Length: 112
Length: 115
Image (cartoon, rainbow over all chains, first blue to last red):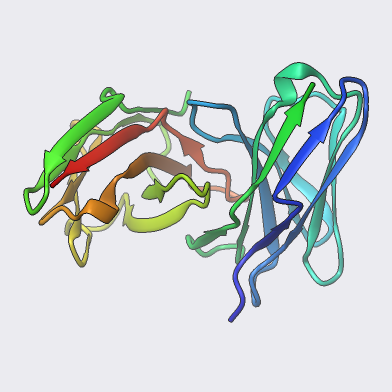
């Protein structure tokens, strides 16, 4: 079974730009969650998608948005990038109702 | 409010010794799950061990065991026979019962294993 794959691995963007991060979920998983991990901190929950709909959201502004596709892969979009958006973005897939989560290796975003 | 507290920013241990990483949690939900993850410098969160709030026995997975004290709301990770490859960040996390699978993480503990 394949794990969770995230792309790209690293990205540098300019303040005010928009970015799209991608995640393919583990085979058999139907739920995808996104987390933001600032340097030296624990991951913070951004939102979760189940059956192509947002199913829960953390304390992040609307410029953070996402999509889930029929094959359960997902995108995280961030508009109007700010310097504080610089972080490691982690994607985790899971099967709804199960406690197992599989994380990807993350996308390291730097906003300059 | 749900919260995870890890009070040890850094720990070090000699190779082959045991080490305990502390974690306390706060929740009003009777149904919850507690996780420990390892994060090497590569960034990936590696699942180590899980404890459900209704589990009667402490969880164990190989060299990892979870010292679950429900009344104290603590879920400490014990790593036995430390190895050099155990050097990493360790995060305690909690998921409450309910409709979706949100994880709340602590700030983490950096473990250094010395030869």
